[in-house]
Length: 169
Image 1: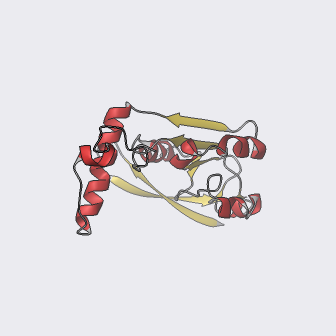
Image 2: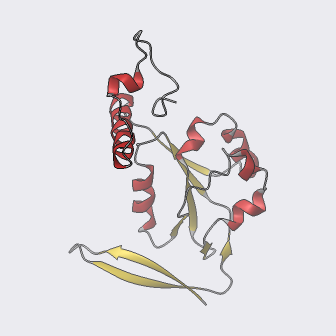
């Protein structure tokens, strides 16, 4: 038997530790569903909410299999090994927002599983960009780096959009 822990929030806002017993025949399987979306759209929040369901098994980290040549060239068996051990009746969900902005990803996912479920999350582009800027600026401040203003980050001095800015790409 393999033990897996899940933390469940009860209605009285108390967190309890629920230990699942996963049968011996459980294994690592390719995902049944992939969450994609642009940065700062709530992909992590959605994954965490879905993971509360007892038949959902989430992949903890972003794998970057389909958008990273180094990982993709390691093959599907490597990808499968990155998945959590799960009961065969569970739905495995992976989340990597970068899949949304990488041109080769749709074809690669389709080649792996033409009937996989994909959840795409989008957000108002202006509020998303502001949220992205705030997070990047906060990260820079924490390590003592210079933080440009929002306008300096997203616009060139001539007023054109800085399409190389991480939050716009």
